[in-house]
Length: 365
Image (cartoon, rainbow, N blue to C red; front, side, top):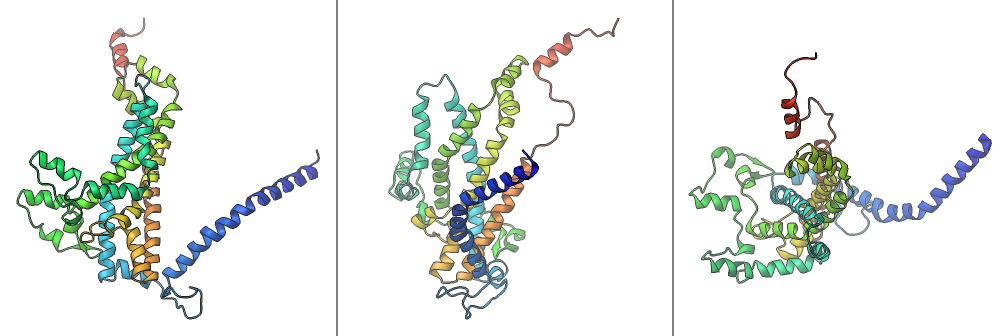
């Protein structure tokens, strides 16, 4: 086949590829890219929510909406600071706990000696396919003042808190239990986003702690399946070689199994990170930011600013700040989990040490 003919076939295949992907490109452009561009425009404008955001009476205000929620010094900045504080505690607690639990469950149901593995896989995964609204309503019932959790606590002589009406952070509650009611001046006098560092260290409220438990309960099953698929695709030759070298169960898991699961681990952490910083439906259904704005999240604050307070520019600005936070943390996570060159000698396993000690001390004859 001549060069001209091959070039003609290549152009024909490229045209056919564009033709088949054109419907998807149009749909994504209309329903994904265009709304994002419109929201970005709104974040720099004073649009009131009436008419088109591109009409002549809509003026540009520059970065005023972003400044109002980050450096404005008013209620908007404090609300955004509280939302960031609440969501930061939510992410710091949920991501590692749900990742560790899902990995543990995957290792557990992957063992051949476990009977009824299919049942356990289904049971662990079932909360992930249940409606988040239904689970939130169930959680509200469990953690209410007369709910099952407080009832169980009363059996052991512990008076459970009024979970969804107590704004106290769990760290502050623990400190008050030992007589510490106020933090040092360096924490109370300095602030970030109009929230003092002492408030940043308050910990999640009891209501947010309940939502943290709910997130771990509902998402671990999904991530368990991802880890399970990764475990079932691992070759057994490396693990068998580690056994021959005398490596124990923990050594094999830490130095052999877990490094091979790094791509799956990155996926789980990334999905967990995105899910944690976009939490909305549980807050909307459950507490709507209360008590005392201790369950307020940036995603719910964006909705509240735009659809309830009619501050559409600030709502869009919060959404794009949240987007930048997610991108930055994903890139940081990717950098932390990157493949690093192996330097130095590898750690010797017990069998290596035994073989070295068995070698003759003298030199070659």
